[in-house]
Image 1: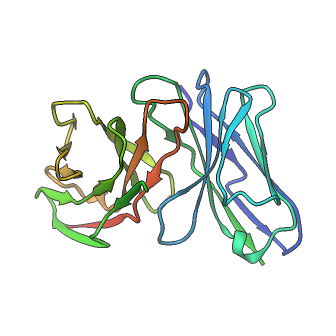
Image 2 (image 1 turned 45 degrees about the horizontal axis):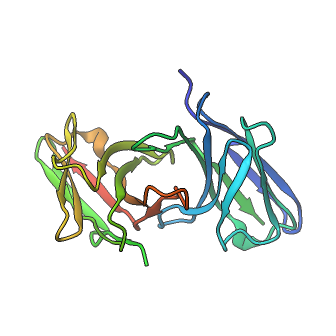
Image 3 (image 1 turned 180 degrees about the vertical axis):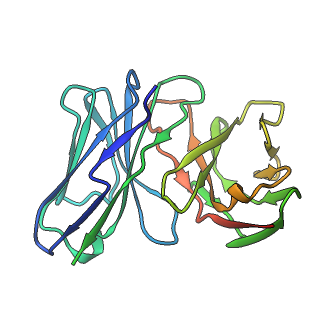
Length: 114
Length: 117
């Protein structure tokens, strides 16, 4: 039983470039979440999908950020025109809708914007 | 507004001793869930334990237990018989409600635990 996977694990890019991250959730998990974590802080919610529908977006998700989950399975998070302030760990989590709705996290993608 | 507070930036514990990590929360919802996650230096968030607001018994999972005091809005994590591998960041998190409004987690700022041999 595989867990949540994310690709790439590390990404270094220059300011102004576009980057895309991928998340593969635990199979049969219908909910998928993206969080951002900066050094010394807890993760902050970015967005959430139930199946293929994006049901909630944080105000942190500026119009440079877009997320998709086209077939209700894997998801992508794209950041356009990256800024140095985008440097962070991007975490993906998935859950199955039940009482606890426990979210299981992937290993994260660490983004460094030079 | 929903909020999680972890007042201990860092904690030390001697190997094989028990340790309590504090967490207080603020919510106006009657229904909510509380979670603890462990984050080793590798970065992955590992789920440890869950407590529902209507659960009458404190949750336990192996060496982890959650001391849930609803009136005080606290959900402290107790780790018994600490091991060197327990050294990590620990995050308390809350999910509000059973409505379809949101399932996002709100995290505290974390406590770094160091287990001494």
